[in-house]
Amino acid sequence: MKLNQLRDNKGARKKPITVGRGIGSGKGKTSGRGVKGQKARTGVSIKGFEGGQTPLIRRMPKRGFNNIFARDFAEVTLSRLQAAVDSGKLSAGAVATADLVKAGVAHKTKDGVRVLAKGELKSKLTLTVEGVTAGAKAAIEKAGGSVTLKAIKEKPRKTKQAAAIAAKKAK
Image (tube, rainbow, N blue to C red):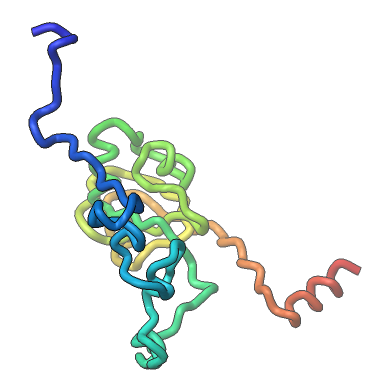
């Protein structure tokens, strides 16, 4: 077979329907869109519209709370730390948040790394992270390591009161 003999499979390329070429074509005049109205036009966006009735999304009750000041930590388990040490990505000893990100154990986050007590740790590690659970801290210390908590930067609060306090501090 040569390059000039290559063809698509039969039916692989379907010819598009020609519209708007007279009533004899079967798709003339309105081009299969029906007659008049919003849906006959281009750029229609009526996904949630229910014909004047209050849309479902507005009829449903509002539930829950989204804390805009919540911390966003990358969660790292003890088993993941041990796997990184075993594979040679991390060396046993002093490990900081930057080292965890560089080794691919933790992904970049806004507020740092938090160690969780899932799995088992056998290597002696001296961790410097932003958060650690009580169980994880106990497991690290049992393995002969230690944990130092770094201070977390405070998120700026976007309120009029906070702006006034910041302006006072600036003077």
